[in-house]
Length: 262
Image 1 (cartoon, rainbow, N blue to C red):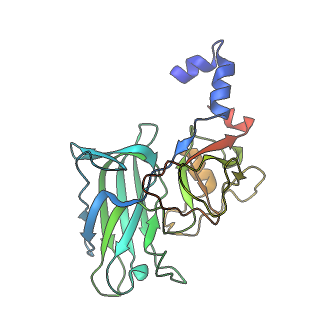
Image 2: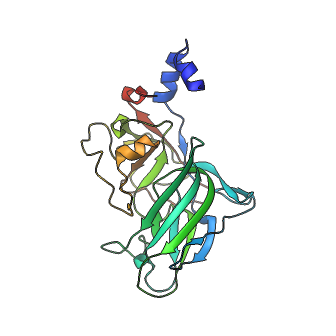
């Protein structure tokens, strides 16, 4: 309601400015078990134990919920002797998105066609959360052995793709002109210079915004579908980073088409 009143009042110019020039997104640091502790995978559905207490670089756990310090998509990391890259599982994450709306992210980690023992142990997810109510997992592979999974944020390994929160829900991902690195915050990116604009999957001028992503995408997420729930994915080399407490920030650049339907 507040945005509607603002848009239809004399402050409509300010409303448009805020939409087209959103605040930077702050990235969370590496903490692979910061949201949920390690759990031994089973072929039955199991609830992961959410982290409790305030001493956490990702947020704070209270009253059986986990409150993220910054809205973020989560990462699952598989551990164990043998071939953790070949482990597959289903997951369900329930909570609130960055608009305060109840959501569930249901998906799967699948066995990669060409496994990379270093990077394919990480499963990135497709929805952005601000509050986590529950996380459940179920193992689905048949390779044998004992493996565990933990949930948090992985910045050092995993696919070179990131899902980030948009400031609003868009009708089309082609309203996104790109994403610019505002400050590296102590991070050294291999191929992303400060103030450099990078393309976003489904960006303006692209005709394939309805093509599903290819990695761990059992639910058929596309750039358009992500944009319609207020998220965007970008992928390019040099995204991985490690640092004690990094604070990199980036900002999405939107076109005037982003104002349609807001």
